[in-house]
Amino acid sequence: MLSLYPEIQPYARHRLAVDDVHELYLEESGNPEGTPVLVVHGGPGGGCEDYHRRFFDAERCRIILLDQRGAGRSTPLAELEGNCTANLVADMEAVRQFLGVDRWLLFGGSWGSTLSLVYAQAHPERVLGLVLRGIFLCRPRDIQWFYQEGASRIFPDYWKEYLAPIPEAERSDMVTAYYRRLTSSNELEQIQAAKAWSVWEGRCATLQPNPKVVEHFGHPHVAIALARIECHYFMNQGFLEPGQIIRDAQKLAEIPGVIVHGRYDMVCPLDNALALSAAWPEAELQIIRDAGHSASEPAIVDALIRGVEQVIAKGTPSAG
Image (cartoon, rainbow, N blue to C red; front, side, top):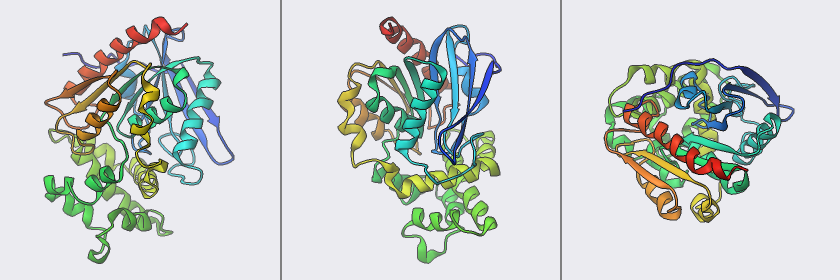
């Protein structure tokens, strides 16, 4: 089984203003002349982590990490103004042009798979390939499953703590109830709600309990951006038209792809990946039998590293 490549440091860090409010953090590591790979992080609002560089061969890849609007090291932290899917796609194009990249491979998981698919459907000529994990189609039923009823029946003990900040009278619409608190002028109320929202996700993300993952999700800096931005997007159905990703899947037909999904993914259930695979049969679907949702699970790491090699081998010869 393959494991992560050795730790590396960026050779360049950049800050890119994309409007009057938002400034993005991006970095490059690996080989400046290698195959460009953009890491598209989850959430929305999750931000990149240092270990994300380690899915790629640093001698062969130009590894680009980008913190999306309001996430990670981008500023302002947790900012909702101007934060929507269309603007994130435009930001990716701005970064591509800023870095002088012609075509790149997109490596995205969870919400990162959503955004990668939307970008690829908008700009298929700019995509060498897609390596996607934990597919999230952002359909109403997918949001309902994790934040209202579904995963709650798998993890009823964790669910109690997710319910705790919300009065019983408001629990019929948990996303709206959380949105009120996450956009409140009361900073204490905001951070309490953010931690409960974010820790719920961290606890459910791995097949085996992983305190390090939960600790990361519970960090105030991570929690406030993740919770506020996720809730903002889910209040607006991901700023997507109904069924948009599956409807436009034919635009992916010429793009090599690998879909990696844990069978026991409780955050984004497997039916997301099956629906995408049916609409995009050219991509290879890999169902990982001993994994949940997290990119850090060993069998997921192995499949993603192999997927990158596979897609680069298919996509690079046609890169011109």
